[in-house]
Length: 115
Length: 112
Image 1 (tube, helix red, strand yellow):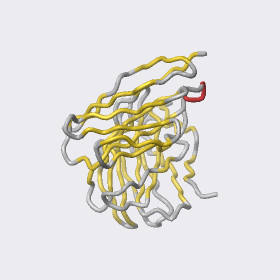
Image 2 (cartoon, rainbow over the protein chains, first blue to last red):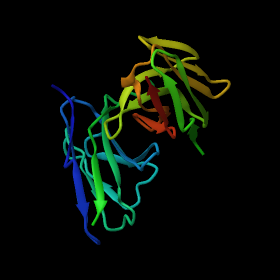
Image 3 (cartoon, rainbow over the protein chains, first blue to last red):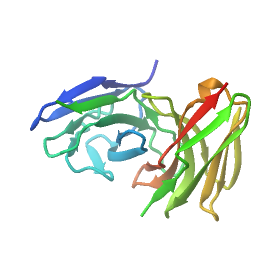
Image 4 (cartoon, each protein chain N blue to C red):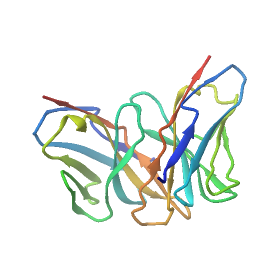
């Protein structure tokens, strides 16, 4: 079955450490997205990518980095510069067509906590 | 700035009808989407309004009025499994693809 796989489900970060969250999709979608969700709040866009080897900053990109070397993969690195990384991280993908109803499909998320 | 406001919590009984409102302040929105998220899970797409008016999908309907910067999600014949958070999301132009700007979310509690 097609879908989005995020790993790990839970992740702990030590002070000053970079950690990388994995996101893989087999839906053949062009566009991929990373969101951050804090308790009781909506989703905020960190980065998004419309095509391989291209990505754009979202609303809260500081302290994060991404790469898009393959269509299927869009890993997110939470760097030591992100001083408040504890959150639920969601990856999504869509076919990416502009101005049309292209719903985003989400993975099951990764919960990141500080040790 | 761009923002979408929703009530934080709504409570209803099984079998009833409930309406979740969404008001927005933004420009450049091409439409309004709705997503459902059960506690700790992945959001799932429910509906999308590109034009003003009502869109119906089974027990769920969604409405959009661009002139009023307002939309709502209507859930009929409520079931216990409908207890979840519901998010409206503005579909925003982001270059060669669309971006979603999510609302604050509404926690729906369905009681027996």
